[in-house]
Image (cartoon, rainbow, N blue to C red; front, side, top):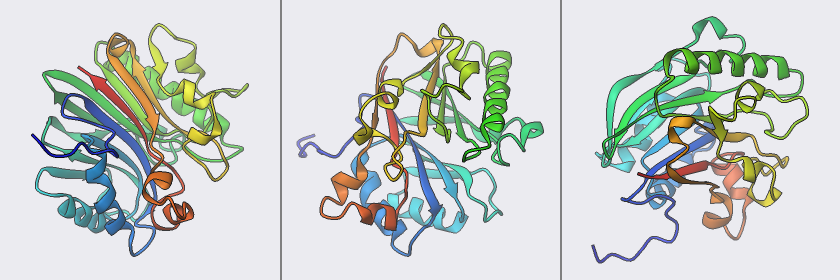
Length: 264
């Protein structure tokens, strides 16, 4: 392949490349789909775990623009509520099962956005992806804590030997005193937030620049600890809208995507 290297690429043919992306109230603007049609191919990723998808037809249109190698899933096709979804590039990924939701008995704790599970294989390695969107805002800390407890219990009960990646809009900080992620943070031999250095680092790289805060996280289980990986916030606003970063918020979202690359 003698094409020019793509300087905006996050992923590659050599790695398994995952994003979590809260694309606010999708589609937020009449131009949202067109903007994403330009941006997503440049990123060269395998799977995008999406939050706040309000319209199935719009997601269908985006997928159609991206090409025949892409598929999409939405956790509730009929809802105009912002639901969890996936965009998947089938060039390197095999889907082993249609995505499914879990923990229906905790609808309230998860703000009626049940965790959305995807079972895939990349390069002969099986991964379980769990897309989440915790309840937002001050005053809902206990709901987020209970969501973490329920999710940890599910993973330890049913996925204890799997390579699990939990990613999404967790709507809380990894470095708080009262920490809604304690069920995971209290078990460092079993779980690790791969974006912890971003969370405790410069606000320039946080996923929610408007506040600014870092709310979108990637959690892996110990089956993945020995893999080579790296995690980044993708500064889409700066890279694709260098002359007016507020355009990104206007056309696409108030959240930046956060990605992880596994070299497997």
